[in-house]
Amino acid sequence: MNVAPWNVELARIAKQVAFDVVGFAFLYFLFLAATWRAHVVWLRVSGTVVFLLLVAFCLRVTPVLLSSRLVAKATALTKASESAGCVHKASTVVVLGGGIHSPEVLTTSTQMRVVEAAKIVKLATQEERILTVVLSGGFDNTLGVSEAQVMKRALFLEIGETGRTHTFLLEDKSRNTYQNAAYTKALLAKKSSEQIVLVTSAVHLPRSLATFERQGFDVCPVAAPSPELRTQGLASFHAGAQTVAVLNEYIGMLGYKLKGWN
Image (cartoon, rainbow, N blue to C red; front, side, top):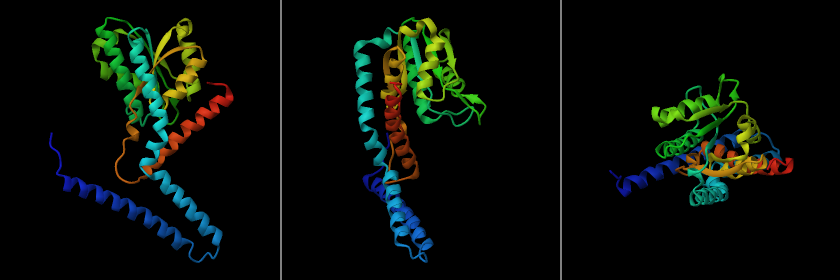
C-alpha cells in the first residue's frame, strides 16, 4: 500500500484547515458588511452568537463527540449479540432504512445497513438456514419509490443468486422508527413473538432497539458502521448536517419516551 510522505499529508491537512478558516471568516465578513449601516447593537451581537453556533455545529469533531455515547452503547449491544450467538439462531432479520437519494441510490447510512444485513444472509446461506428478511422503509413521494424497494435491489446485488432462496418481505409504509416497529409487527403477524435480528446504524440502534422491544419483539441488535461520522479536516457544512442528525436522535429518544413508544 502506498502511503503519502508525512510532509505531503501535513501540507494537505494545512491546506484543508486554511480553506475552512478562510471560508468561515469570509462568511462572517459578509455578515458584518451587510449590517455595517444598521446601528443596532443587538443585531450584531445576536448575529455573532448565531454565527459562532453555526461554526460549532460545523466542526467535524462535533458530531463525533455527540454521537460517542450512542455508538459506544450500540457497540456493546452488538458485542453482546455476538457473545450470545443470536445471529446464528434467529430466523428473521429486520433491516431499517435510513434514506435514499434516488430510485437507484441509497444514502451511505442505508447502504452500510444493507451491507451488514448481507453478511448475515450469507452466513445463514452457508449454515443452510432459511431466513425471513424484512426491509423496512416507506415511500418517498418525491421519488415515487419506497426505501424498502431500493434496499431490496441493493441487497440482492450484495448476496448474489445463491442468497435469494430466503424469503424477502417489504414493509413500505413506515415513515419513522415507531412505524418501522409497528408495521413490521403487523407484517410478521404470528412470528412477531420470535427473536429477530435488528440491523440499523450504530447511532440509531439504541432508540430502535427500545422501540421494537416495546412492540413485543425479542431483539438481537446488530449495528452497522456509521460512515457519515468519519470525517476529515476542520469544519464543513456536511458536518453541520451530521450534528443536526445526531441531535435529532437524542430528541427522538426523549420524544419516544414521553409518548410511551420505547
